[in-house]
Length: 87
Image (tube, rainbow, N blue to C red; front, side, top):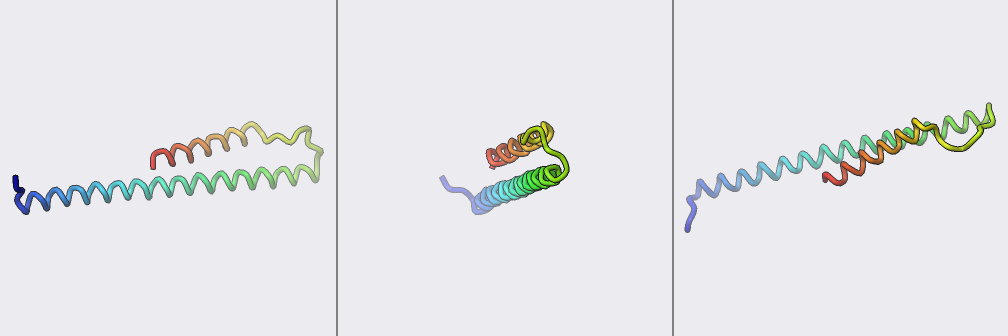
């Protein structure tokens, strides 16, 4: 069975189109992952900075981060994990 050159060209072009779509999706996922990682780093830096500032003024009752900080960190970690799974 032989395919006409035009048919082969159409098949190749379709495969290239799909390949380019996948590459674009991967780039978007990598960008989203980088944003989530940066947000997590900033959140951790802010938490450390806030803790240092509070150590200078008030004796903290415990060393645990605020519940909202922990929840934000968990959300960001889950987001990073799901992005990696999609890739």
